[in-house]
Image: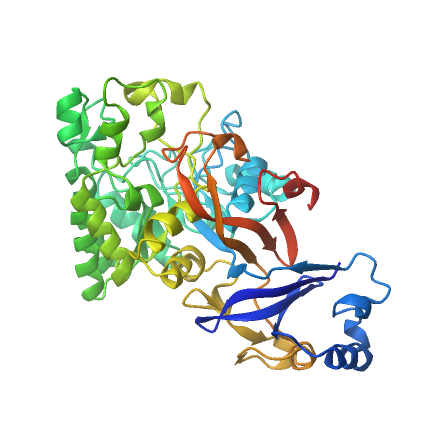
Length: 497
């Protein structure tokens, strides 16, 4: 099927330009705005191998051809999330690969990396195959899993068979548990490094935790009588690991950074040449423990579990340090830590509900509304954090065709390689000048209220329920084909695949 996306604002060559994008045969071509009709006619007559590449009557006999007007819409590279939990196999009552990938498409994501806290734990190729088989059968997008660092994914047991899994995973992690000894982390880094793979760490020193911790160790915990989770439980392990990273030379990535101390440790490590990157999540950039306190003012509501995640929401000074870290590049990317649970589980309150919230379908609108619209972060930097930075660090599809978050118009391999700026119809298609065919289409002015009933994820717990946001994903294109389309909860997300 041929689709022409007309008149959108595409982020190309580090700037926004008005252009058309042609989707055909799994490829995407970008053209200058308003190519003349005679140029379109000449294109079709001169290049029969790309017949029907235009619009209107130049589609000829291609009855499935479609023209979509994107005037006033933004065309961005497909987002990538290196930190999601799709729960399958093992916990499919919470989420499945299918529903998780639907939620990802609904949120503008075309590539996601699910963590290994599943059953069986992906500790070797045989156990990993259970997840890979489901991905191959049911995924709508690029779903590239993690392998576990330890055989029990507990941060303490012996190392997994990383060598057998390495060709099939994005990296290795025990997310949900920190690696509890320096010796074990050193061994993990040395093995992963020899395989050219990242170690991705959930940093949490269990010796610094009290049983039952559920919120940040701060004013709200004191006032409510809840057990707090200290900042030191995170940053002390970050500190240990960056030293081990320097020692071993392993490529190292820190999950869901939440404290000001972690930001400073990583900043200094980067300045010293340590091969470290990190992520934070939308909720840490936009919320604090004060938001939990406000929601629980006058008594804790039954659904307060929608504010419970690990690490917890921390103080305002931590949030400001995280924002500064994203701004100056200390924090490389933003990941959702999408962690759905059943409604019954999340209705147990702060103390008893499990850690984790749903994040894929709220990430972009929340970040655009609370950070970009308020002038805290540029739109361009946000796109880089969501699209190109995770692809580049993790070697995900499209990494070489994006530049600081923007598309590059590139030659295909058979046209000799290289890069070009925006061009006209004839030059683009004749020269096989293409862009990365994963696109996220945004209506930047669309204002709406976040309603979990609109989610395609099975998990509905979000601290952003009821928030008014501006900027909505209206279409997600994966490998040149529409994976999601609609201004509201639209079943075409399934019908298109």
